[in-house]
Length: 196
Image (cartoon, rainbow, N blue to C red):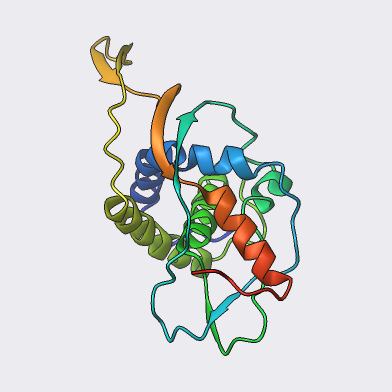
């Protein structure tokens, strides 16, 4: 029987159940756009910019959030979310924050699944990484505050009350064009310079 973390199970479960729908909605567009992308070899990003922010020429696009879900327990689909790109001939490694956020979301997914059907490789250290990722995702959501207004519909609760909820479906958002970012990274991974 797998060993559960030292925190009371109810608090961890509630935390996952409360934050999972929020994170799911925030990342749905990223997930949908990268589902059909094949997995590549391990990734790392490097820069001689000495820990300075890259100034990518990535424009904004209007994207509609949809509910075209894939299965939460499909390891292959989740593995396809994070592109594997290496920028050659650089001395320091960096990760694109968007990719780190997707990695963190995947860890939250694994932690969520753990409580429903514990996988053999989930350890206390994995839960500690999930805690770190939850905080990173919270800060990234605040940093990239999406001010799109999402319409609500009344949903009946188990106690019979009606509360306004939103699914985020069929709502247009202004987003950075991550497909262009992926294209720039792939181009750079082939030994080409990135135009910044």
